[in-house]
Length: 168
Image 1: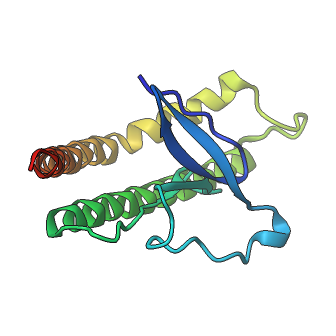
Image 2: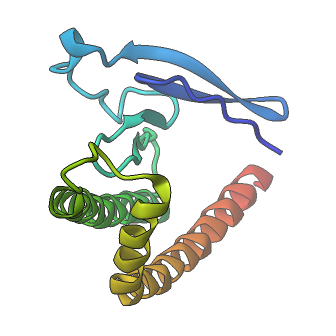
Image 3: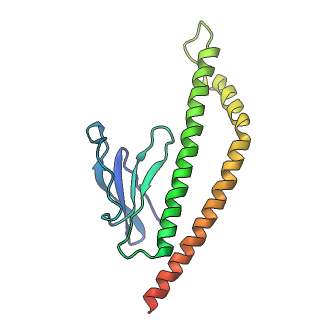
């Protein structure tokens, strides 16, 4: 079992330590460091997790490139990166659409005597948005499962190859 402790607004480094993952602060992402370059994947010792994206709410992972990376390990790393990018694009588009539609709904449906909607009034919008995007979510989930099973297959192959290498 692993425990992951996330530090808001920080790029963090994950270390495996005994039976848990230890999070170490690496770099701040405050306003003055927004222009900071991301770490070089060839020079970091572990995968690194960044702060949440303001639109997608996903944390970008910078995958470490080991110096003696095999072809199979490279394919696995690149596939993980591709799945992350695909996921990022989907949720950016989805959440942008959600925010725009919510803003339009609030703007067009606020009575003159009220300043904002109650949670019950907003639930009408949330239900309609989910109903309208039901097929999109269904297709996303199907594709997500396909991509993750492909990743799982590659991950198993990488682990088996590493174990066989250690045995020799």
